[in-house]
Length: 139
Image (tube, rainbow, N blue to C red):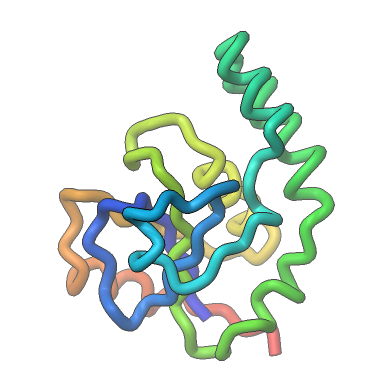
């Protein structure tokens, strides 16, 4: 299995499984997403506090404590074929603060792999060459 992250407007290779980790997927992006995992989305409380105080460190700590530390990544990954490439997606562009980057770091820490971000400047074929090296097995 391989993992990458991106945002909904990015050009993602067709063979990647596009997994939304947003609370809500707006209608214009429903056709982009193959699977919706709300368990990796921030709660309204976390989101509202961040919007009110703009403290990225506080947001990250709450998100880790309340969401990531309670999410069963092994069970989540078992839902997909072992040769899959999952692309975890949400709304923010690669250069914006976003929970997707916190999820990426957490997966890297847990499984010892690099989770690549696909941005609007990346070429899918060049990216795919790198992601092939970051396969890991759970099964």
